[in-house]
Image 1: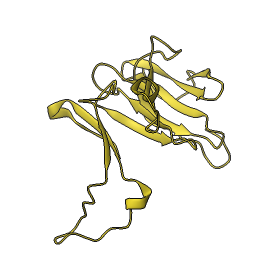
Image 2: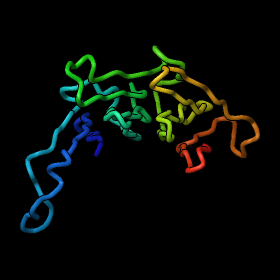
Image 3: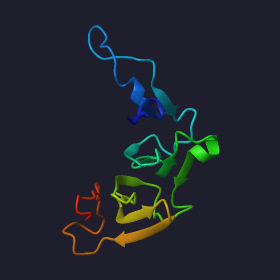
Image 4: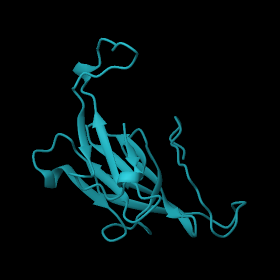
Length: 166
């Protein structure tokens, strides 16, 4: 689960541990096991309160795309099982990666664990990037003029199909 609270400039990622999925319903609906783990931007280094996507690696790492509105953002590696705060959070943005801007509109993961993302802005020609977390290799795919939209395109989704095609 992820979401922003723009009025309070806060974002968060809560997790319900698998052993807590079984529960008894509360009167009136819903449930509360008091078992949620919560990481909030108030106490943790989220680059932006606007989270646009999450993908989950086989190793338990959560990849968070953010920054589609407002300052900050990028691709954040969040390892909830890390032993130190420094190992738990790492954000890739335009200052430490090939990303053009600090904004990721969409995120998907293929069967090999490679991440695919749309990096752009409403007034900036976007590019699609892939990132292999195992090797650390980034690849950029520019969008050509053949697309039937104006010079400044907003691509707001990327999806890896069952065949592995983007």
